[in-house]
Image (cartoon, rainbow, N blue to C red; front, side, top):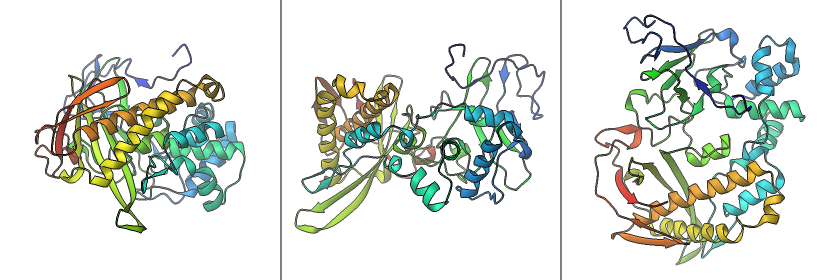
Length: 398
């Protein structure tokens, strides 16, 4: 926009008199009809590895190819796209943050903290890895600013090793009221990449794509083909893309603990749940496999919630610490902190046999546990919740 802020892609004009798919879904001069092809990106405009395969989701060759095009700059056959990528802001994802920003994020996430034989680590951990371990060690890549830019641009913008112009400008949402497209990547070399409308898109409406439509809380059974690496939960979305996604959210927590009667061995389990919000600002919690959190998992959540609350009081108002970090990093850490507290609070409040009144800080939030509500928000969005997910309701002022 005129201020220089990137706002995504919007439908401004659509002059087609009839839809191009032959079924008459187009709206002349008004928008894009359901099932319309929004864009077809030919194979020769896509930056891709020589070893492209439909079911290959990562490739060192893909980074090398993008790096080669970056080095060519204006001489690259993809020069306009390369210029666009090289002009993207840096330092937006945790892996690219300053050392001080990474240290504060690790501290907020409790990584390395053990309390009463429970490891309190919260996700994501991916920002500890990335460029050094994968690109330098595994791919044996060069270490310079251009190579670093290529690595981070590919890991945050590619579609399974493909760098697709125009398509990668779409912002993310899984909100059924916002999400309006689905993509289809080439099955074979030489084929085009397609972006289609999954509903009517009105003029001036933003075009959204899902960055993680294969997550366990995916809601739309009509588009559940998951031959893609887009399975990230909300934790990973923050770690890989550097933002906190809107509702619906998919949370996963690795619970590691020692049994009280056996202090020799560490045990691990995964706590997963979906979190959504309805029109009345009511939080909806859906535990995977119809299972309440185990005693250890519930204790893990409660300890983390108390720890996060204390950090919000003791550190968030520390102006000296704030001045030592880039503003963006500071704000994103506390935005993610807030989303963690909301998610964990809701999960704790609806767990256990009784309704729970849970208090923390200066806010008091009442959560009531519902029965098996018929909410179309189970795994892959089955109307009858065939995966056995239970839907709970949390009334909250969060």
